[in-house]
Image 1 (cartoon, rainbow, N blue to C red):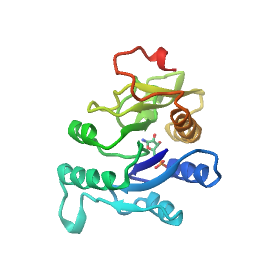
Image 2 (cartoon, rainbow, N blue to C red):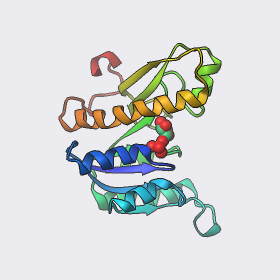
Image 3 (cartoon, rainbow, N blue to C red):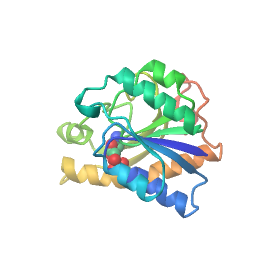
Image 4 (spheres, rainbow, N blue to C red):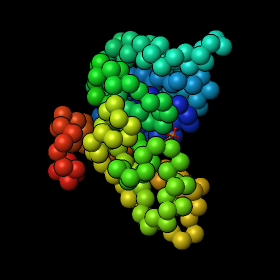
Length: 206
Ligand code: GRF
């Protein structure tokens, strides 16, 4: 499976995929990494693994690059890399419907909550404030509506009485590092499909 990864930050999930690829534990080739931030540590991880990178910063040369320009460049780059799957791993920009529809492969996103609850930012803090007993992470198909595409897989943990937003973040991140490669393996083996339409019930896709 040829995979392109979109990142904005640390890239710990990208690192898990690089390690799995290098160890031969996942049948993937990471064909390129796109970052919308030039200071993303994920870029260092990609370069260290000799993976091609493209930095499409929205503050390129001091001028703010609009989302259209970012998307035009990202689309061209993705078409050049010919991925079978595009993975959003800590990518912090909202993408337009036309970008998603015109992308050369389906996209999946990793989100730190048990979707459909807690879409958007600051999920750990909001989970603590609401007194939730369960939390976790989801991988879903990317559609134009934020964090709303079909859920493919989830991992769940119990929220402890002593948990803080920070402790939850670190525990959820450990789950993410298991869930992402596992989900990609299921996709590579055709056990999970991205072709199923969005209206089918979630339980059918587990
Ligand atoms: C993850 O927690 C993911 O759920 C969120 O951004 C974080 C990315 O972490 N969307 P990293 O860049 O992979 O370390």
